[in-house]
Image (cartoon, rainbow, N blue to C red):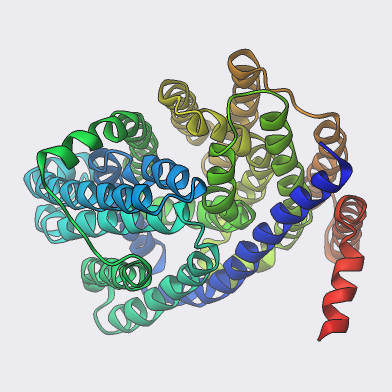
Amino acid sequence: MSEQEKRERYSHILKYTSLFGSVQVLSILVGVVRTKMVALLLGPGGMGLVALFNSTIKFVSDSTSFGISMSGVRNISDAYENNDQEQLNDAILLIRTWAFLTALIGMLICMLLSPLLDAWTFSWGDHTLHFLLLSPVVAMLAITGGEMAVLKGTRALRRLAVLSLYNVIASLLISIPLFYIWGEAAIVPSLVLVGLAQLILVVVYSFRLYPLRLSFTGRVLRQGVDMVRLGIAFVLAGLLGSGADLLIRSYLNNAGSLNIVGMFNAGYMLTVVYGGLVFSAMETDYFPRLSAVGGVGRELNAMVNQQIEVALLLISPMLVIFIVGMPLWLPLLYSSRFMPVLGMAQLAVLAMYMRAIALPAEYIPLSRGDSVTYMMLEGVYDVLIVAFVVLGYHHWGLLGTGVAIFAASVLNVCIVLLCMYLKYGYRVSSEIVKYGMIQIPIGVLSYIMTHLTNGVMYWVTGLLLVVISTVVSIEILHSKVHLMDSLKQKFLRK
């Protein structure tokens, strides 16, 4: 690969990571307002209840969707890359038909299993009716996932970025008035209405590009078998992931309280979810590009390594800001009642360094259609995180859950890289090792600093570490894509 090709690929990764990152920043700013209002209106207990309902519904959705939202991207991406309009239309018809079928199946299963879902999730009260009322959300998630697969596979990246912002705005406008008027009684109606709004937004965009067509003929159903076979691995992986999420929150609810669930969820959202905004471009841009690479070898290695390098360099300064500013973010985004989760959140931030390295590598088996390897990797991580969180909370309370998330992430990245090396011959580049040896110690040092300093010294030292991490990332990115020159040209054109 020539230097020009390398520069163009780095520029592409940086462009779309920045595009989705910037939109995600706007989404997070809107989400911050929503989260703050929900925290004030419902408190930790109410947020814990929202987390339990969301975890359970996601579990049912992942269990019944047959992985259409992921395997569908691969099918459509192949047709789109070949510039075959007939093949593309057939692929979209197939995805939409199977998404509709799985929507019906998921909704019916949620309705039938409502008493069991109540027994598994709650140790108090009767929430069977709540799960019955939430069953349409499972159907909406299946159809929305199918349409998102269409947009991802056809590289409608800007539309996807804008949709993510609109979804957060819709969630804010719908849920806050309901919570203000009816409090916790509005949780179930708000989840249904938010799911409906997100479905409408996605189908309006998608149907405009590709008008709706469905077919339930034997030929279409048979054609979907291969896609579903690959999707079964996604279902099992989703079952493990959603099940782990549900088990953790159910355990914290029983071993602790609903307030503990709410605090854990707040810390998890603030670090793993908000901190992962840099990764939002991976599923929409990186995965289809990786799927288009034939076979394994040098080109595959180069694409994965370049994605890891950019992700690590972009996220590192932000993680230092998260760690140092956590005493401000918690009361600002939630309320002072959530301060007990401070230690857990700061530790969990460190896990995002590992995520930046592991996630691009985890997409390799997905892009090769190797469902078994992907499922095994997901299963190993889910077992690790559940076991570590249970042990961590048992010994050190909420702080122990932060230790658990970090420890599971470190072990997981080692397992993923070893597996990718043995299975696909993937090797981590020397650049990744070098950048990791610079940026990860800065993050660890910032965490140590939060315990050794206070007052003015805390903020001065923290600011210095933020500047160092930022300068290092900018200098390296500039050397790869002439970042400053590109910014100057854009500025002068304006």
